[in-house]
Image 1: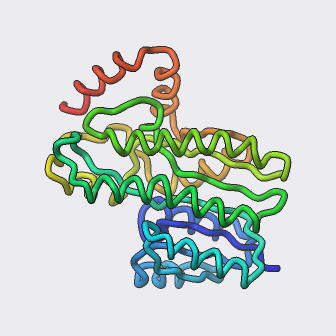
Image 2: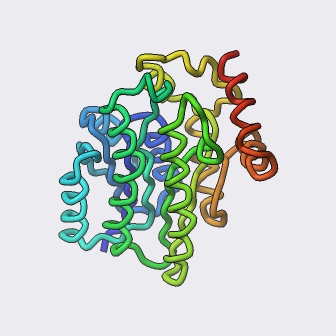
Length: 255
C-alpha cells in the first residue's frame, strides 16, 4: 500500500512550499498535487525527488472531490498527510464583493476543505496528519475582509472539533493560522472592486518558513500560528473585546 501525501493549492504559494518540504523530509511513496493549473503542477513535479501525481482539478466543483475519492479507493492508498492549502481571499466590504466572489471563497475555503477531508479520512491510519490551512484572520471578525475571515474561523473551529473526533484513531488534525505570507495571495486579494481595503502587509513570512514550522508544530499542536505576530494576535483575541480589535484593525489597514 502506497504511503502518500495530498497537497491542495499546490500550483503556487504555500501549497507549493508544503509539497517541497514534504519532499525534503522524505518517507513518502508519492505526493498527489492538486490545483487547477496543470502546467504548474507538472513543473513542480519535475523538481521533486519523491514521485508525484498531478490532479488538475477545480475543488469548487464537487465532481473534483468525488474524482479524488474514486482514485483513493482504486489505489487503496495509505494517506499519511493531507494538507488543505487551496484557498483565496478578496479585499472589500459587502458592497464591494460580487456574488461570484463571495460564493467562490466560501466554496473553496470552507466546503471543499471539509469535503476533501471527509473523503480522505477513511484512507488514513494511525499516525496520519491533517493540516487545515486557516489564517490568523480566523481569530476575530475583520471588516473589509469579512467573508474570508469568517470562512477561516469556520475552518479553524471545524479543525479543532475534528481533532477530538479522530484522536481515538491516532490521527492528528492541526489548524494552521499564520499571518501574512509572501505569495500570490495579496495580488489576488487586491483584484477586486476595492483592492486598497488593506494597504500593507506587516511581518509577512516566507511560504517556506510557514510550511516548515507548520509541519513541525503539527506533530503536537492543535493550532499553530507559525510566528510571533500571529501568536500575539491570537492572544489578543482572547483578552480583548472584538469591537476593540476591529476598531484597531480599521485604523491599521488604512495606514
